[in-house]
Image 1 (spheres, rainbow, N blue to C red):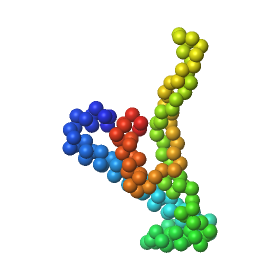
Image 2: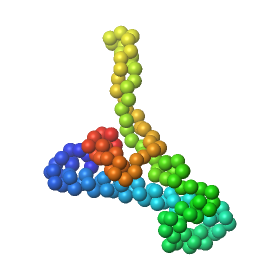
Image 3: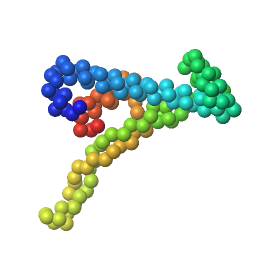
Image 4: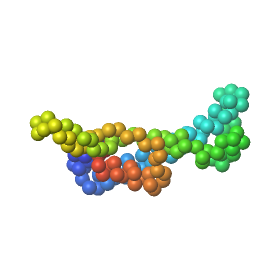
Length: 143
């Protein structure tokens, strides 16, 4: 939904939509974290020779603390993994300045603004993540 469509909804509707989108992306971030923990545990068990069914059933009902302990027993401290391995990767537009050539004026270089996709390997968590997402919702062209 573009910014024009959101503005036609009115302030109350667009506020609800804004809140829904922030919560949706925050849920996706938490889900990525959960999936990363589960995947690391699953593949530790598979490397130990467990079948897919055995590994899945062994993980069923384990708490987060139990999963962290399982990884720790395999020499992995989940908290010390790179952030992108736990939270995922963010990809979004960013503006940057580039020196350009203007053939009409002269052969001088002039600064121009360009856009490129930024790959973010260190996404924030919790409330900071909500603020991070809100920045894009306030500037829809950055998505």
